Image: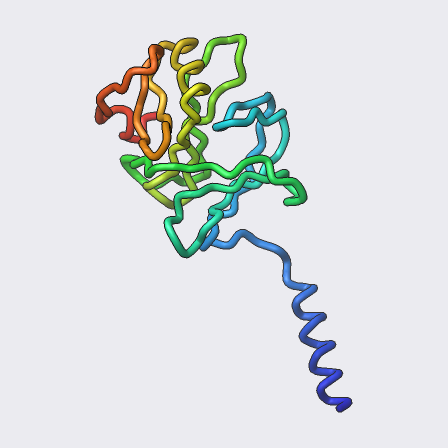
Amino acid sequence: MRTSILAAASLLALCMSVPARADENNKLTILSFDKPVQLPGVTLPAGKYRFELADTVGSRRAIKVQTDDGKQQMAMLQTIPLNLLEPAKDPIVVFGQTPPNQPEAVKAWVYPGESIGYEFVYPREQAITIAKEAHIAVLSNSGDKIERIDENGRVVADKDDNNSGKK
């Protein structure tokens, strides 16, 4: 019995002494923003946030955003693949164009070492607002459809430059 208690205590001490680190499986990345930013359905105040895959087994397209301590969930976001020309050396945040009076809209996030990132799908009304202000097409969902829409809410062709990894 004494041996099993010592073994359990040793295992607990070992687990507690191992530093926390990012798991490549969930793509955990801590991102810092020095000013507010827009994500689909939410505006994040300046600060640090955890971006990670919400489902590491299934579709791997849902992204969970939490405060840097992981205590508060800020958003659960739908994405589509964003192809880069070459793998990212560091984490990349791609911003869409927005007018000066609005927080920048985060278009995509890319995990270091990968050439496929995660482009965020905005709710239709928010996408139209961003499109009107910036005069650009924005990735949007309406029901079960994901499409790029213009400032009038019309579907636009998905051009190669919308998904080519240009920053």
